[in-house]
Length: 321
Image (cartoon, rainbow, N blue to C red; front, side):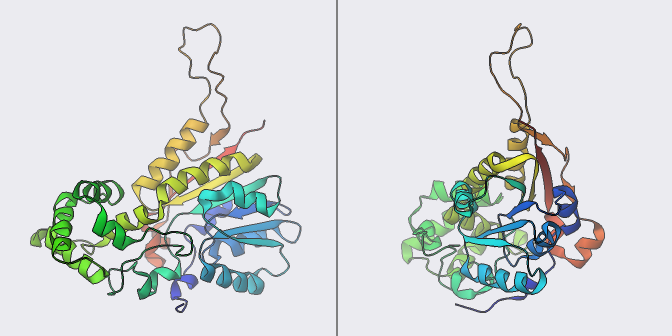
C-alpha cells in the first residue's frame, strides 16, 4: 500500500486565513471536504471544541487513517465523523453524517494525498510506473492508460489544452497518437517521453517539468475533478446554516474560475430587465461574497511552504433565509 510521505507533515496552506474566514466557535459543526492529513482539521477541531463536531471527507483510506491518528493526538475529545468518499457526493455524505446543517465548510483543492508520491499509483512524472492516476481505484474504472491509448487525438488535445492549459497540446496529442500506434503507452516513463517529443527542445529547457501540465490534465480527466467540484460546491451551499461560511482554496485557474462564477451566481438577486415593474425571475441571493478578490498567501508563507505560491482563497457566507 506504500508508506506515508512527508506531505502529511507539511503545514496546511493559508491556515490563519482559513480560520479567520470560517469564524468557527465552540459548538460549531465544520466539514473539511478535503481531509488529507488533517492539517486544517486539527485546528478547526480545536476551534469547535468538545461541544462541536468535525466532519472529515477523503476518498483515500490512507488519508483517513493518518487523519484519525493525528486528530487523536492533537485534538482529543473533539467529536468527529471521518467519511470515505468524494466531495462530489457531498449530499450523500452529509446525510450519512446525520447533521441538519453545517456552520463551516472547507475545500482545499490542492492534490496533496501521499498516494501521489507512491510510484505504483502512476501520478508522478518523476517515477516510472504503470499509468493509473485513479484517486479511488476501488470505484473508478477509468485509468490514465485508457485515456492515453483510446481517446482520439482531438479529445486528447482538448483535455490538455483545457485542463492543463498546455501551450503545446496539439503537438503532444499528435506525438502520443503516433507512438501508441507503434506500441501501447502503458507507463509514466513512456508518457513523459512522448510529451517531451511533442514539445520543442527550446521550450523544454525553461520553467517547470515539461510533463507537469499534461499529467495534471490527465489526472483531472481520470478523476472527473471539475465535475465533482461543481457538484460539491452546489451541495455545500445547500447544507450551510444561515450565517455559515464556505472557504475554498484553489491552485489553478480552472478551479478558481468555477468557484468565482458559482459564488457570483449564488449571490446575485433579481436578473429581470430594469424596465419591468415587478420581478418575474424570482431569483433570490443565497450567498454574500466575503472576498471580492481572492486571498493569497503571504511572502513569508510562500518562503516556508512553496506549495502556497499558487493558492487562491475565496470565501462566501450563507444569507439568512
